[in-house]
Structures are given as structure tokens and as C-alpha cells.
Length: 345
Ligand code: SAH
Image 1 (cartoon, rainbow, N blue to C red):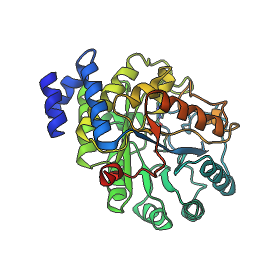
Image 2: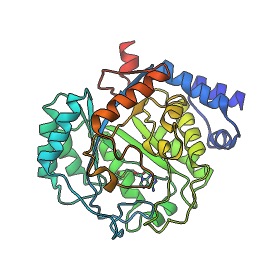
Image 3: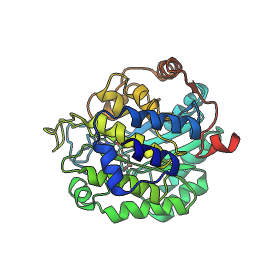
Image 4: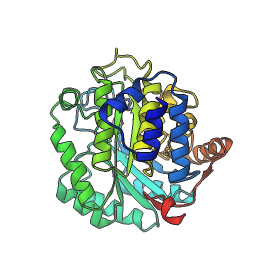
């Protein structure tokens, strides 16, 4: 293990087999320390905060793991108006956020014109803007980019094509990859990522995920433990061990792609009381506090046990900052593009 870690630290290269052996090694304190050191060297001690606005939970897709899947008839649907979205972004800017992330299910009500209008309004606020609204055509991605969107989050979820198409019925794995390549060639900062602990997922396929992120290459990637939602077909699955495995994935990813932006994901904190702080000390350098109005937060329920559903946006901002300071880190005042830290050094 130590030799492998040394190799990863110095070359940022591991074979498939080597990644599998790091992901399966027990009690990997040395892995987390190595990832934390790489994080410090390549992205520094500043933590980038991204204000997350969950603006609609309408979704045409039926991903078996997801609480807002079209087939969940118990989900109470909501959709913010374009004005409400822009107002929420304005509030977030008032709290000091430098990046706004707009996330939703795949909601056709927001056609290209509506999205571009929202993007243009938010970009007037002097912030970086990230979209996370699913699979679109190249033309749509190009239109959002021309309107000012800077970044796009689209997790591959899993690189196991057979598993992906089983868990995301009606969707095509190739199309998801096509989306990521279109986004990259259109000049977005591209974020991807995986769910960890899906039924039928192997450690070998998780190693493939990391090699896939390296190949694109991604500018950011979020690793989230899969948490079964009671109103989905995967309700009876377990989440035991998913936090630890997701943490290991994230740490290995920091060694392979040392300067990318890696969030301490909200799902990690749902499974572990201090999950995001643990993640920030094992390779992560980004936190995405929720700024969605409190009345809608519980409705955007991708998985159960979502944190901070009752907290106001200003309380979240203060609470997150205190936590970050408690581990000797600080909230960066920068927009936090990929490579900014090294460029400024
Ligand atoms: N429609 C957008 C946003 C999806 S929601 C898109 O397609 O990209 C954001 C992420 O939540 C998903 O990419 C998925 O990885 C995660 N997610 C969904 N259900 C989950 C669950 N049960 N447990 C943990 N994470 C989940």
C-alpha cells in the first residue's frame, strides 16, 4: 500500500489493478493523509463555497435510486419561477457566495429561452454560474454557454454501462458520455462524479470511474454515497459501508487528479454526523451549502436524511464557515475555477 501511495503521489498515475487494491485496503489512514497533503499542495487551504439552488423537482426520468424520479407519485412537485430563481441568487450573493449552482430534475418547462434568460440575469451579479440540469442537446448546451454559464455538473453515476441502463431505464449511457464531451468541447468547466454503493456495482467498476474522470479530464467531480430512498424501487437496499467507500474513492481521485475541485458532498454528511469535515480532510476542497427557500428544501428529496432542511440560507452560511474554521481552513473569497490556486501561487 505504501509503495502504491508513493507512486500515486509522485506520478498521479495508477493502473486499474492498483486503484482496486487502494479501494479495497482496510483502514486507509495513510491514503487519507496523502490525499489531504495533495489537496493542500494543489488547491490550498481555502474552501470554495457554492450556493446551491434546487429550483424544480419535476423530472421526466425514472432513475431507480432517485427520490424525485417521475414514477414517485408521493413526491410533491414544485417549481420556482424564473424571478424567484434570480431573487434567490441575489440573496446568495448578499451572503457572500461567488458561485451559484442551479440544479433541478429534467424539467421541460424550463426551455432553452427561459434558461438562457435566467443565466443572463444571474451573470449580471458577477458570479460564476454552474448548471446541473441533466442531459440536453449540444445546441442547448451551446446556448447556455453563450448566455454565460461557466460550469456544468453531470455525474456519470457509474461507468458500468449495463448497470447504468438498468438503474436509469430509458436512458443511454453513450448519450451521457456524449453530453460530457459536448460540454468539454464547448468550453465549460465540467464536473462529473459517481454514486458509490449502488446494488450490483463492483469495486472494479469504481476503478473504471476514476480512470474515466482522468481521461475526460474532468475539472471537478463529486463522489456521493448511495442512500436508499423509501419511495423508490431500491427502498430495501442498504447504505452500510457506502460512506467509507465513497471517502476512499474521493481520496484516490485527489491523488489521480490533484488540482481539480472536489466537493465534500451533502450525502456524505447525511450518513456521517461530520461527513463533510471528514471529507475536507481527505481530499475535498469545496462545500455546496443549500440556499433554496426553506419551504422547498424538504421536497427536493433525492435521498432521505438530507441535512439542514429546516435551516435558513444565512444560518447555513455561518454554520458552514464555523465548521471550516474549526479544522484550520478558511472560506475562499475567490470564484474558484479549476487551476486558480496553482496559477496564483
Ligand atoms: N437532473 C440532474 C441532477 C440530478 S440530482 C442530472 O441529471 O444531473 C444530483 C445527483 O443526486 C445525481 O447525479 C445523483 O448522483 C444523486 N442522487 C440521486 N439519488 C440519490 C440517492 N438515492 N442517494 C445519493 N445520491 C443520489
